[in-house]
Amino acid sequence: MSKVFIAGGSGRVATDLIKDLVAAGNDVVAGARHLKKIIKLAGVTPVSLDLHGDVAKIATLMAGSNAVYFVAGSRGKDLLQTDAMGAVKTMQAAQRAGIKRYIMLSSMYALRPEKWADYPALASITDYNIAKFFADNYLISNTDLDYTIIQPASLTEEAATGKVRFGEGNDTTNPIPDVAHVLASVLTADNTVGKVIMMRSGDTPIADAVAAVK
Image 1 (cartoon, helix red, strand yellow):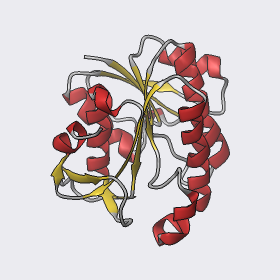
Image 2 (tube, helix red, strand yellow):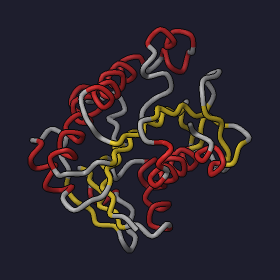
Image 3 (cartoon, rainbow, N blue to C red):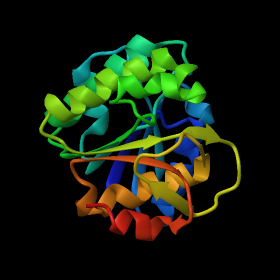
């Protein structure tokens, strides 16, 4: 069992992620601006998180956690301070708090700008991808965190399939519960440390796909 901190704890992905983490026996500290939107479950502690705030305060909220998830997103309204610098602050805070494990929710091909124009779904969120490009690169190049970066295709509010496909490929979609389940599954999967995992809907059970990451 771990104590896990989630930045962006009131969002759509976070809600399903929290369910999965709690079901696996973890305690969750869910940080968000809108505390009332955080799912109410035993084992979940809501805390007020302001990504515009300073790193020291964020580190205090994380204290005692074994891992950090960044699943926050401004939906295009605050890209610099939330999706880019907000993410960086949580990395810096994790390091200050002595936390090594860090799991980032990113975007398909976020580290490959030359690919964005090839897919309408990516071209339509170019500014978001730019924010994720810088956040992902900072995580890889400017921290010593044990990171895993999950880069899904377009998120959809559909029922879980429990199946995925990892790696490069044509831009498709991912049901939000499947993305959340992948995020939860990599927490204890040491083979995913230091990996960038692109995902989309597929035919491989999530547990098998995670176990096969090299």
